[in-house]
Length: 399
Image 1 (cartoon, rainbow, N blue to C red):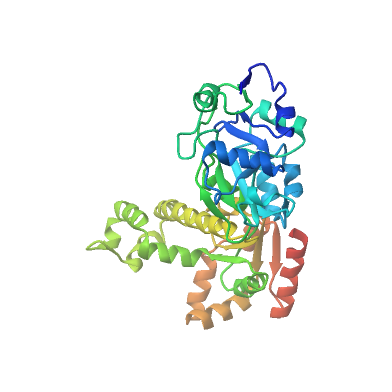
Image 2 (image 1 turned 60 degrees about the vertical axis):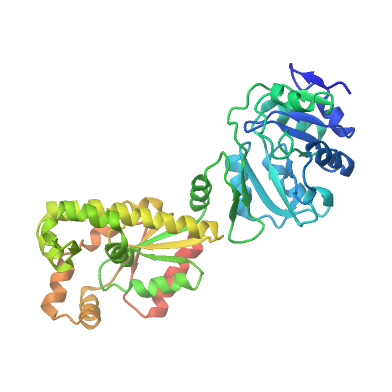
């Protein structure tokens, strides 16, 4: 067999593939060995010439994100979003397969990997052929993946029908494979697209609410309304205290800045509080360190929630705006309450005297600050049921 080389376009590659032949095609990652993914005999040839074990399924190349619905079923919105964001590109998304896809492609399973390659010539060939390409890397199974048409010909010259010479692959590394056929989503192979880029995109697609407000305003009841919606609840005050116990990096930075707050390497919280409580400059230094670590932990948990298929998250933080966490949120909600009600709650909750409770209230930002900086302001001056109804109305608007 003479292997044709198309070095000025796609030539007759689409015709060859539609007729059951094999053509090596360029992508941004590596060259693929392409055949008609809906033709069992063509797929058999791929397995045969590669020496690929029959138990390993193949992925399909498609021409655009819009083709997901042709070859997959039960497609989550998150998968469509990732395809729109990263295709064409080095991301293979595994989904529940359309039963019409030949069993040999799926290796007997019920899922299919789909990818839209970022190479103009291969996309052109896909459009011209009108069929998906089963296209694993164009190498012998277990051998290095080819980065040029010459690499392909060293192995398959005279064995396959043609090669589209698209130059050197720009990335030279296989695509990242993400299984979204079930939750939690899972990276099966780390390739050219970093997992963090995927999880960050999923986080951007989530609905994130920021909750803040004055002490004693009743934020706990607000959070309970979100919990009933299955939201991830991130209590930044609790995260902060956990970090004080477990974050070596944060503790090291705090000791360097506030050595008098440490005894034998152990942080004495009351000492730290006494150092910063009446000094705005030292308090700002403390916040600069702690806010950064809390933000990093919040982002880590948001990524994990997004990869589990989560759709809603709530960040509860007194310093939501000043810490920068508010920028992560679709909307921010300030929960306020009359001062007299706040006084009663704080005194009962924390065992404070009236004077101590008033001092704590006066040390916080006033209501005007929250009204000015938050998307919504909720006044908690009624029953718990009335407060929940106000929050449900906001959720309905946003969602």
